[in-house]
Length: 406
Image (cartoon, rainbow, N blue to C red):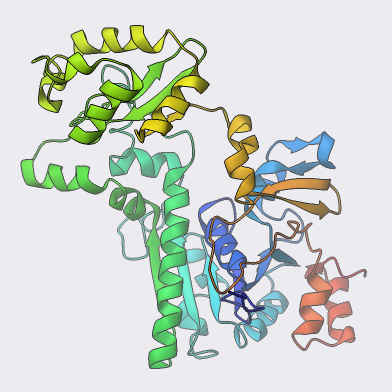
């Protein structure tokens, strides 16, 4: 089939007042879907992550900022000044979506909260992301991913059973909140098409982190007991998780009896385990795990990671190599899916970037574009939205905008 020319959100205007991760992750998703995302940043400092561990090899640009801000345009604008607020209100009149992740009082102080701007554009979808939510007694407390992981129970469930709770290696409370924000915004846009009105979306990091505890939260509600930590193991399945081969680690999943049969017969050559009362059933293997695991590890240690994975895949038994990130990024199946693209950045030069994982049959997603430098598109954005050359020059002279050559 021939794909249509435009991504699904082409023509949608998103005003992005977010910084760091949760909000920028959502607006990255919207940009990948074709929305025109205008990232509105402080004209002197920009997004905090522009200053996170800059790379001398890439023109002083910070990888943290680069990864989550591709496909966006930067407007460096001082919204603390009345002139900057007036610019925002003119843009709001044309916008489909506004997303911000300040504490609930910040946009209100600028006269840019939802109640203050809804009459400018009744169809505006306005998404607020904060640590605890606008309807919380803790609404003015700043939100951070590690705190949300700790307070939601997510951290409690992560780590080895006999060790301390661990924060996840990736800031998943932020990432999940950004994904929920994207979902909520898309739903609100559909509702707007149906009902003709916009609305306010109130998202909290702690809510998103709690929602992601999923079946464990349900079991805690049903039993009154918090689940223990299982590390790389599983409470209901064995074998499951991390195993050592002769040259590296693999992770495997035996999820049903048929996979166990193929594992024993076709992968490790131990058909006798199918009738061994210690190992024949999943329940027996869990009960006899301390006996079973050393026997399994001794077998897996006899061959390489690559050879074992080939045997698993041939037998149709789920398993994968435990890769470091560079191995994952270079993997042929990753490259075949186009998950790594290239862009040309004004300062960083030729830059590889991770691309959107979404693949539509009929519409494309946006091709990767370089993350913006601070204020790179200020003049382009303002002139494209009805500001005269004199107005733009005056804003630049007064320090309200940056990046317009004045």
